[in-house]
Image 1: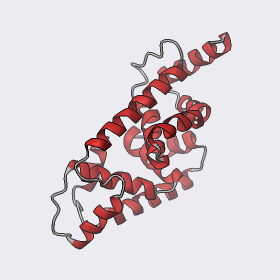
Image 2 (image 1 turned 90 degrees about the vertical axis):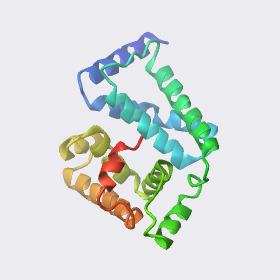
Image 3 (image 1 turned 90 degrees about the horizontal axis):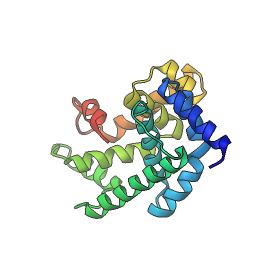
Image 4 (image 1 turned 180 degrees about the vertical axis):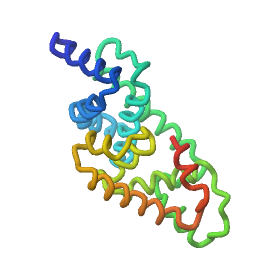
Length: 198
């Protein structure tokens, strides 16, 4: 690793420790495409690759004060991304119902049997993933930054490089998708469940 790369890593690490949200934006812009190419070759699913990587960057921000990048940030990101991909494949192979590949079938079952609300955690998670897949990219990012990182609209606007009005519109669009997917289940406890999902 060159001295320039070491300096950049130290700068980004310092920004993370100092709670500077621009650090995540820098990491995302610098490494997302490379990580996407590596992970997607492993799991062969573009939407799930995007989800895994968004979760990775959110986890980095959440754990920013305890992270130890050791040799380089890029190596840390590759290792973390591949570990998530391996977990994804392992969990997918263990799934008792193949709803991750076709969560629309679960939504159809819910519509056919709205009284049956006894869904497993796996089914709720599949619906959550399905809802995310139906969201536009910016809407999904705004929603995750709000719900998982507890960012305000102004913080989300700065992180995403958009106006607060645009954040409001994207949040509204994300919530509309969630209401459509979950409309026949969990009307009272939906948000509590969604905040606990991985």
